[in-house]
Image (tube, rainbow, N blue to C red; front, side, top):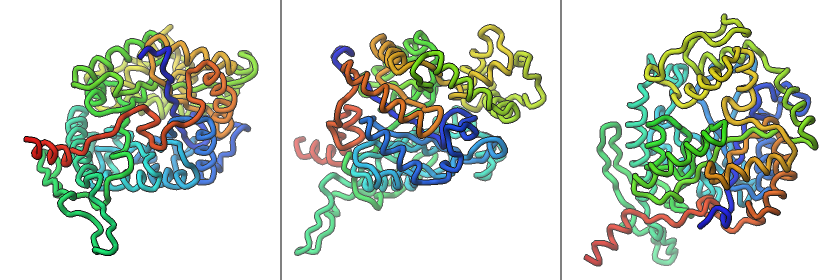
Length: 449
């Protein structure tokens, strides 16, 4: 089907009171909202009003450099999304959970619980945690090696899917008269024995309405793209130019096909941080009002973490010092390369670099009118750089309201985005079909053999 006949997908990436690192200091926000679950429930309702596919919360497992100069992520995201689930009806609910510092059984159980609570709206953003502070919180002396994290992640996801499949769709009987809750022949021990995990199963939660949660991934390194090609159904990515977006899109779709899947099985959703106003000049002034509130002390610590180089004593008005080659980086390789490339454009100073990164940590920032934002999204979609977008409001709730109430209607008028929900599940929102249960499929194959 031509993209001209398809509609794209929109996810709202929500963070505290906004993605801009100075959002909590800006008069358009209330810093205390980051501590209030009602604020996040309201954001879910706003996104649902715009018929967005989903909302998404990232997660971190350490305080890191934020605590003095920026608002912390207060809530564990699956717990928070459970609260949003009961305040909404259709919007998808995606949470980050690490494969580095967790176990498959607990992960499978908590996402199945969210899927049941929300009637089939859960999604899992799979990450391989890379921070040294995170490692220290889990008893490790250093960050696990990049390749080793992805090896573990592959087995982690494989066994999590096995656990989700351990109950067949019709295993639950609820036969009150006969006293039968479930058919034990359709609840399966998995007996997984691998390099990293030994898990008996079955999961102590029945299969959910959509079979299993949507699988999302956000790594753009070579290992990350191969992992996404094998497992992911949506990818959140940071691409700053149309050409970079097109190259990433072609590369990832080719890897998906090579992995034996259809290219349409995976949706590529670049991030965009939109500053929206009546005129372009007003939008740029709005963006500058946030940039003016950036704390250099905080930004230098953040940049040091991204690059693995201590910049806290480095001059703001000098270029970056020489950086190590990417082969020596064990953290997030794709974000490291993005920041390194961004700094090299025009030999930017550190001050200029932190200004560019303040809105979305390397994601594309765009200031313009609602029509200009819609034009930008349409161009990326129709010219082969995106299947949809990860909308990252720079401030909340106003930035999300501006997008939902001013940009979405334009996209709907152009036939690019849905007018109403046509599905009740997250997988349905993303146009993905039903999933076969591997145990039921094996039973059917044995019957016909």
